[in-house]
Structures are given as C-alpha cells and as structure tokens.
Length: 145
Image (cartoon, rainbow, N blue to C red):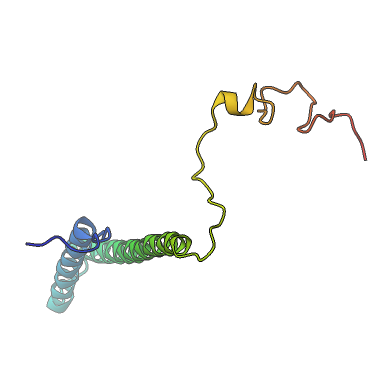
C-alpha cells in the first residue's frame, strides 16, 4: 500500500458521529415509546411525561451534537486549505527566488540575534528595564501635549 502524496487532513468525527447517532437512536426510542403511549389512549401518567421529556431532550442533544460536528468538519476543511495555501505560497516564493534573472538580496530566516550582535541590549528594552513613568524612546512620562 503506497503512502498518499499529501497527508490526509484531520477529519474530526469518529467519536462525535458516534454520539450523534447514539442520541438519534435514543430519540427514536423515546418518540416511539411516546407514540405507543398516546395510541393506546390510556389516561396520562408519569410515563407520558418521562417519554415526552426524553424525546425532547435526546432530540435537542442530537441536534446540538450534529451542529457541533458540522462546525468541526468545516473548520478542519478550512484549516487544511489554509495550510495548503501557505505551502503553495512559500513554494512559489522559493521557486521565484531561484528562477530570478538578476540576483537579488537574500532575506535570511529570522533567528534570535546573539548578544555580541546587538551589544548590551541597546536596541531592545523591556518593560522591566525602564523606571516608573519612563516611556519607550527615552522620553520621560511627564511630557504633556
């Protein structure tokens, strides 16, 4: 068996689909039970209330889980398409740089600069390096416009 050319995107659903189907089976059972109770024509008892409550509850649970499953499936499809587009964009940019007629400036992949490269942190200051009321850029905090 050959491996697929592209990896299969994550498709949620095996467990979620099981619970949607399970809620559907329970809803079908409760609705059938309620139909049998109503068709016999006896007086209303607690069994009617239980069957009706179970039918409504399991139907709503099935609908909510079904909507959740559909949203997860849609999000997984969008995510897979986004990843595919990002790979295509980066591949096209790489191929365009390799096929360029004139040599251009190569932009290196950003890495964390070494300490000797930027000195004693003169270009980057954090919030903790500043005093109270000090603003970035060396201006004091008491400046008013």
